[in-house]
Image (cartoon, rainbow, N blue to C red):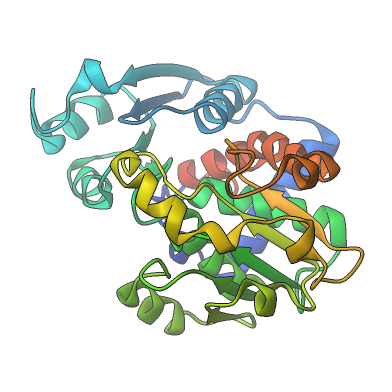
Length: 304
């Protein structure tokens, strides 16, 4: 078995991404297996988490594995000891390590030092665990991802970046609408443009243009963890990017709305729109469990 990191959706080729989704679907429809029997997942989270932490740790246990869990105050990466030493120690006591970090470079450094695979549980660059659940949810709803039109309204941060990589590889036509200064960063756009796949990414500033013709409209919080000091500035910048009934008038009548949670009702989405689409949104949340199982199997080489 060959173990593999999963730091970015770009780590997966088209076939691997499709097989990972098929694995998640099988785990959901046919039930779990015990392929992680005796193996250990360690989670190290510098930031708070509900869905990611719960889904990964439950996924490991359902697969027959064990879990070691550490919060930011216990490890204090870079203060108490460098990430390289943390990775060397934990890799001698674990089979896979899932990390939620402020800086993506922390994951890269951990990967270089670790003898076991590293799984990105969110960084400032990407959130691959979320993107996998998003694709599974879209495929359940629409049956086929190729050719599907999806609009993302809001900050071009980690969730949008992972979704963009996933869209290109899965055949989705993704349009991201962001205010000036908050679009997907240029260096990541270059990587996305160099990513092979049948899908594509379009960047616009007008959210009405983005939702026109979209089968699904996706939004996320305006200020992510670590950006709290910018919340007032961001509320002003994103005021015209709220997903509300007026915006959705420019979308097809059967459009569905997605949100990765937590949701700030009255900011990026109205209560009315959220509640109307709550089944889709909580399907996304539930599917985090099945894609987490599939991701753990992928990193450990248990899908081979």
